[in-house]
Length: 134
Length: 134
DNA sequence: CTGATTATGGAAATCACTCGTCAAACAGAT
DNA sequence: ATCTGTTTGACGAGTGATTTCCATAATCAG
Image (cartoon, rainbow over all chains, first blue to last red; front, side, top):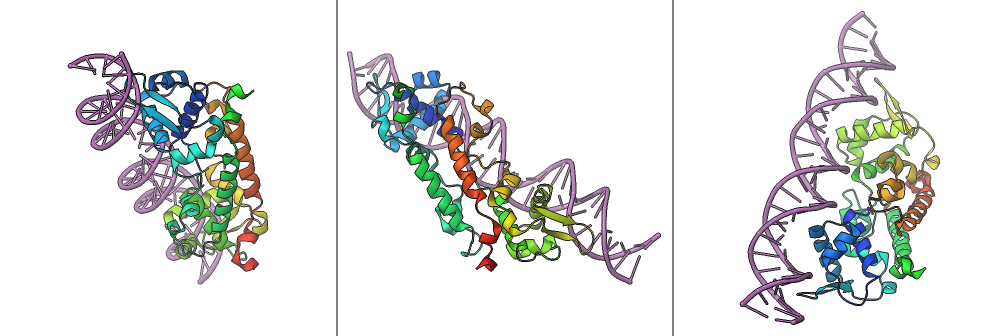
């Protein structure tokens, strides 16, 4: 699994919103504060909305806010919302992707690696991460 | 960390050579047996040679063979030889890559994830993997 | 020595995916 | 109705992975 910049932005974004849970925050503000290109961030928060991690509000006084408490959002949630999976290769997601025979000896390794990675990332949430928790 | 096809090919290649440790094997043969484009495989075995995982022999009766016993080659060795690192992002390799401030709260997570991944992959060697071990 | 064999190395074509922009459409608030 | 801000889709540059090709160097067999 490669953490793409998109995912990195998404994490920063949620990190920022963790400090402003009350009212919706506008994309412009997040973009400026977190040094993310605004139009790119628009795409990202959309994905997060569809994944029910953020909630969106149109019109004036609109913007985005967390759909749940920071403690209930894990790093794995975000990564899966952005990249679909946290697996190291297609093989670990869909065995049909193996172009060689189904008797791929390495396959169980990828499966286990994926499991370990997911378990770890599931354990990290945004209450732990957010500086206010200190 | 994303397992690239190049790395996948490299693993298959070593898997094949694990069954023929005596005399050198020609690239053509490995390519055909393992369904890998020959000219691409040439590049791959070169990398593996430079990483001292394979040994190369030129001229007739030449080819490639394992530089050490399968038990002494780990999956991590191969991945690092091919991709440079098994980390999920640059951030976990070189902190200078963090374009945001050095106070990146997520950074320790990537470091730990990288460590866990490497530990696991270091424990898998080609004697375990190779079917003849059964 | 000569020729056949095989690896080495570089350049370059192709392809897919990530990153990022833009503009038009849609919806809520006043 | 208008302003504000999200939604959506299309688009393009850039980057890296994948792959091929070719010229060159090393080695072995005769």
